[in-house]
Image (cartoon, rainbow, N blue to C red; front, side, top):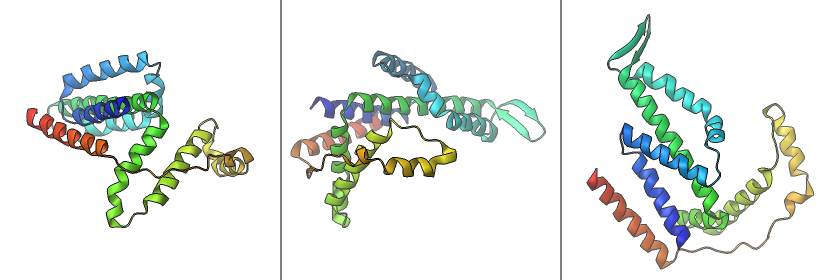
Length: 204
């Protein structure tokens, strides 16, 4: 129950981040950084991993958004509105990644696996085989757990992957995969989440 509540709050925060303006965005980012520090999570390492994506936002928004000019030279023009929009979206993106990082560190892997499968369960109506989906998601999570301790270089990625696939330890997986089905509690959480989304939209 507590895991469901944490995930519920995390999803609400992710939805809320897309609706708020600049100053609330800054306050939420600061709060999330503090929560990450309390959980011994490095925000700096996270930013380094997504630095090129953030750099693209810094370049694209100021140069393509019309508004009050801060700088103009030849074909290059930087607008105040574009710069503000870039900073706002950078804060939003970093906040989203921090929320996901916190959720991944707090919630157990098995809970995430069950959540993903239950989320995909409505696809059964259009012919998706839930048993196969369960097996593939399980294997994906297991292999991610194994591979995260290995280092891969882009220059030799194919050789590194082939080498790791030939390691016998990678085959030592738990062969028991249990069929997961939604429960009445899951439907109540879904209903509560939908009502909360509508309520937040009404307030905004």
